[in-house]
Image 1: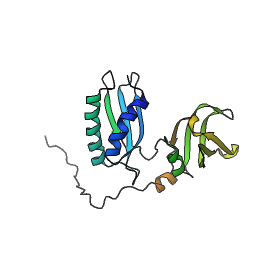
Image 2 (image 1 turned 30 degrees about the vertical axis):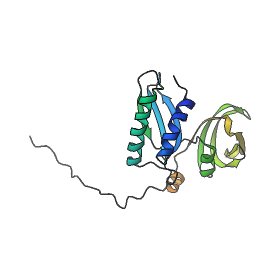
Image 3 (image 1 turned 135 degrees about the vertical axis):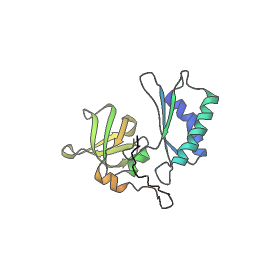
Image 4 (image 1 turned 30 degrees about the horizontal axis):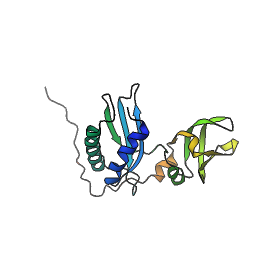
Length: 178
């Protein structure tokens, strides 16, 4: 079976063709039953339903043809969401001032997990203010996984897409009559 990196190499050009940036590719489930692909529109940091559908169809067609996964799997295409994973160094720079939880591939200053506020990016390092412990500088390459923490500050900073042209239909609740 193709590695996650090899799958990302196959998927990234399809994302780029659709004007999207690839955020994460991973196999989920005990035996890798789900191929999860997260992408975003670089202009909004989000993914509309139409973008998701178009990208998903193109991705499915390419995967059917290339057949890089030896077993059956489900394809899941989504936006990274508000409490998004931080998979690129640029993600850390974009979310300075917000809380993060990170798991490190190897200990840094005796820590394998970080929980604090992103203070910045310094070259190839990320800086996290641990509060009482102060700032910790970690090589980005040592970050195994990281995710923003859902806070009121993050909610306020996350600008929803403009739904001004959306048609919203109201469906009153009705009970079936017997």
